[in-house]
Each structure stands twice: as structure tokens, then as C-alpha cells.
Length: 289
Length: 268
Image 1: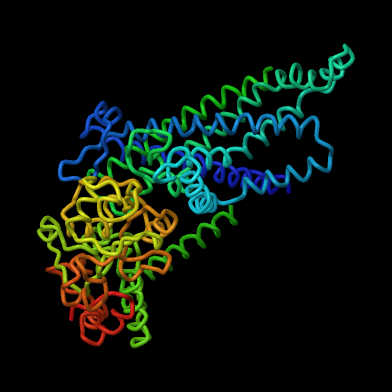
Image 2: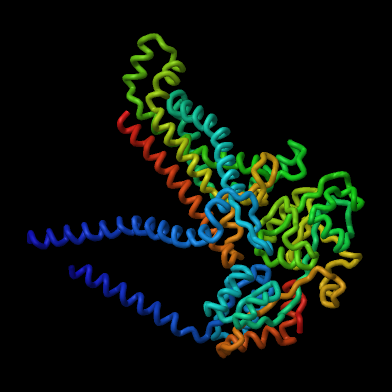
């Protein structure tokens, strides 16, 4: 009896291990595949002309593969989304975690969850039909498909992750901290911003980094509103992100062009790894602090 | 361990069943390639399946370049390309057979007063030589150029016909015909291009050199912005029986009506 039980135990253990290894295997497979397929083009083009070249003409008779416009666009776009999204998300989170009446809180939280569940193509479509013509009319530019439109779409898309993670961090602040502050005569608002927020700061930082990750990795929605011309980034110009550079040309590409697209994916992958490392750093800080 | 062994057995069996399927490809015609050819090839495939009820027809819309690559690697029977084969592609042992011609319509917003442009003017607009609508008789507003992404068959067709290859100053490079039409319909100063078969009422097609983009004008060659729809096969390897049958059917005069029903103009 005992040995049978043990056998079962081992078998279940083995199955769980295998399932766990599937995830690890996928990550490894993707990493290896990206590195293997991304390196050849970088070698052929040269690392410096590839990363710092400012012209992307992949199908021209004399092709040039410079991805600096894409890198800068991705950085500017993400920074812009953070600039708009973080203040809104942060204050919304403070309100929901500390100030909102229970009913309001449950309704708004449901709405935020719904926002997280909307497929990115829907964001893109609404952006294309409302935001792009709106930008054009509001700023009197020839065409509304621009970095600004992409930034606005991204700002909305990163709100749910920022709000949800920040709420979790704020709610984890021990109530004694706040009670002590209130007992010393501070107003509730003073307490929340001078005590609760600093106590939850690493969690809030993690929320911001999560937002950065979401913004830099988004392809579908920005492809539909940013115009996709390989220009250097400028607020009202049509721009192309790292993600959209890969996805817009992949279906028709061949030869060195295709390999260069894999190299762009590799650059994007490194960016995201970096963001994950930063995220881990903050989350660790939260546990210790 | 017994459970594990039986699980493995099931897995092996399932795999062998799948392997068996892929070997038994008789009765399937696979096509792969140009997204612009979707309507035409869809109509032909449906009719062909209806005539031969034991044959399955598949179409994988990946793009002209991918389709040509797929034939070359033997991943499909017939490749679909909405441009002529390049010299290096023919040199790899591929043959292209023109199935039909597709007119590329130059589209503008219905609110624009422009109705006619000639190829020269279109080329000047797309290369950035003319940047304001008032230079071609329209309102005083900057022209917004909408096009397709690099590698698209429509873009390649449009640029090679108008002689603007690699010189177009696109404001927007979109990845589908539908997106181009939507973008043009949203902006009164926009100009774009799209497959004639896909043009909808939300945009207006201009006449080119006085010739409207109609099927007749494409067929007799008077409408100049047009490109071929090509069936790509291997030169040396014969097609399977059912693929050859489809090829003969698609290039026969009987298919002409289906092709024109799908908005293109049959070559035969």
C-alpha cells in the first residue's frame, strides 16, 4: 500500500515538473530562436549601422536597414504614454484604494478590469475612426495618424495595469501606519500621500514598469493609429514602432529583409528583458521594504 | 508508471495518426500567396470543390513573396502572386502563368473636388513633387499620401506602374486594403490606392487620364494602372493530378465569369 502511494506521489510530482518545464522550455525556445535568427542580419548589416542608422528602406534597390527611428519612436511613445497614463492611473489608484465609497469602488474596479480585457485591435479601430480624425481636426495637421495618437491609445491601454497593481500595493500598507499618522493630527489626504504612498512606493514603481512593458510591446493598436512611415519621431508625424516594424513587413518579407525583422524582434526582446529585470528589482524591494 | 506508459502510448498513436494524414494528401489542392487574390481564388476554389466533391481546396493568404517561397519549398501546390515573377525567382525553377488582371484604383475622399488625374500627376503627387491639392485643381490643402507596406503586391504594382518605386513619400503605410480605404474615407485630403475589386462607396476612384477604372478598360488596356494575378508552379516538377485539374480549370475560359464576378479581369 505504502509503495503504491509513493509511486502515485512520484508520478504526480513528475507530471507537475513536466508541466512546469513546458513554460521554461517555451521561453528557452523563443530566446534561442530569436538569437539564432536575429544575429545573422546584424552581422551582415553591422551592429552600428543597424542600431544607429536613420533610414529604413528594406525593399529599395539599395536597401538600408537602420532602426534608430523605430527605437526612438518606441522610447518616445512609451515615455509619452507614461507621462499621460501614470498620473491618471496613480491618482485613480489612491482614490480607489483609500477614499472611494465601497459601491463606487466596486463599479470602477469592474470598469478597469473591463478596460484590461478589451482586445487591442478594438483600441486600434476606435483610435482609427475617432482619435485619428479627431487629432487632425483639433490640431489642424494634414493627417491625424501620428505619434500623438499612438501615445493616447497607449496611455489608455496601460491604465488598467497601473491602477490594479498600485491598488494592491496601497492596500497592503499596514493600517497601523495610517492610524498613527491620523492620531498625530494629520488629515486623511496628508496621511495617504505622506504615509501610505511612500510605504507602497516600490509596488507603485512596479506598476509603472509593468505599464512600460505593456506599452513597449503593443503592436496591433499602435499600428492602426500611428501611420507606419519610417520617420524619425515627431509628435504630429507618422511613425513606426519596433513592434509594428516587425509585424507590418513580416508577411511579405524575404531574404535579408526578413532576417532584419528578426533582428528588430531581438532588439525589442532585449528591451523587454531589461524592463523585466527592473520590475524584479522593484518587486524585491517591496518584499524587503 | 502504468498510467504514464499508457499515456505515452496514446501520444504515440495520436502522432502516428497525424503522420498518416499528412502522407495521404491526394484529394487536396493547396494554394498559398497574395492576399489581393483572395476574392478571385476563393471563387475559383469554391466552384472547383463543387465540381469535384472529393477534392479539398485550401488557400493560405500570406502574401506574394511568401506564396512564391512556399511553392519553391514544396509547401503548397500552386503559389499565388499579384506581381510578375522576378528574374531570380524564375531562375530558381519557377513558372508564372497569368490568371487575370487586376486594376489598381486611385482613391480619394468623396468630398474632394478632384475627378481626374493622369499617371504623371499621380507619380508627381506620390514622389512629393506636388504637395498641395490646389496645384492639381483642388482645395488649398496638403495632400496626404496613403499607401501599403513594403513588400505588398498592391504597392509593388502601383509603384512599378507609376514609376515611383522606392520614391513614394508616404504619410501612412497600412497593412491592408481595408485600412487604406478606411483611412482615405476619414480624411478629405487623402489619396490612396486599392485593388479595383475592393473599392467601396466610402471612397471615390478617380479617372486616370480620362479613363475610369472599369473592367472593360482594364481588359482593353486603356486603364493603365493594372497588374497581373499569377499562378506560380515549379517548372520541372509536374503538378499532382488534382492540382493540374484545378490549374486547367482556373485558366480555362469557363472560369472567366467567376473571375470577373470577383472583380478582376480574366486573362483567357
